[in-house]
Amino acid sequence: MLRYRKGGSGYVLRRGPRHLRPHSNDALRREIRVLQALSNTSVPCPRMIAACQDEQVLDGAVFYLMMPVDGFNATVTLPALHASDAAIRREMGYSAVDALADLHAVDHVRVGLADLGRPDGFLTRQVARWLGELASYERHVGYRGGELPAVNEIAAWLEQRVPQSWTPGIVHGDFHLANLMFAPDSHRVAAIVDWEMCTIGDPLLDLGWLLVTWPDPEHPSPAAAHALGAAGGLPQPGELLERYAKRSSRDLAQMGWYMVLACFKLGIVLEGTYARACAGKADKATGDFLHRAAVSLLRRAETMI
Image (cartoon, rainbow, N blue to C red; front, side, top):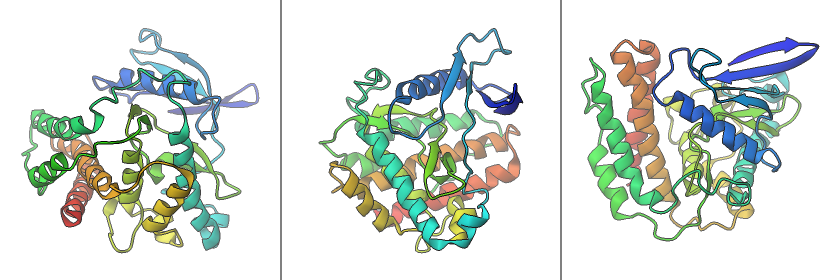
């Protein structure tokens, strides 16, 4: 991502990583489509100016140009206003849930995203999908595999309890505090970012993802060790769930299942960076940190079960 100014105006150019992965361009194409579809909704997201899907223009990379987001990442730093006011930090938590509820209320068919994913069988595919992802890490030389705890036990539990009734909608796919930008002068979410994993499926997986990554003294996790979590004053996960229930008509009776699935999926996603680090393809310190976070998530899933 590159931020620059031209003619007195600011712009941001977004593309895949310097060393493109096999699906980097496909992920950017997905993000471009989603941002275009959401441009006329109430969902806070970056506003696109133009996109280029021709890989020959910029050294093999799909890219797009967007307006800068006037906001900050609360997992990195807090402005003085937010650092000094616990009431604002509490409202930031509720604003995060409100932004998620707004996304889940969007009619994906009406905005032209009906074919973005395959909602039929979405939940029943999840366990096999992520077990396959974990198995694929064995291609990285130096990664031993089998280092995540209770994977098979968690997978079996999930497969035996798949919710049978749910309403399809837009799933961000990676909804947590690090992918939110907050307004510098209020508690408001200025933009949800990083839409590469967006699909059409069961939106409650997003809510489960938010809850298991939320800073929670009862369930400390390396993944939640950041500036906003350290400042404290946030709503508890149960309060976030109550807020979502007031904003949505979705059935939350099986949220425990979605939280276990979120731990399972996120743990496997984080392990991917560790596997690449073992092969010298990612920073070792980052890989080790994310491996510890993955182990913590799987242990938490085991406890919830």
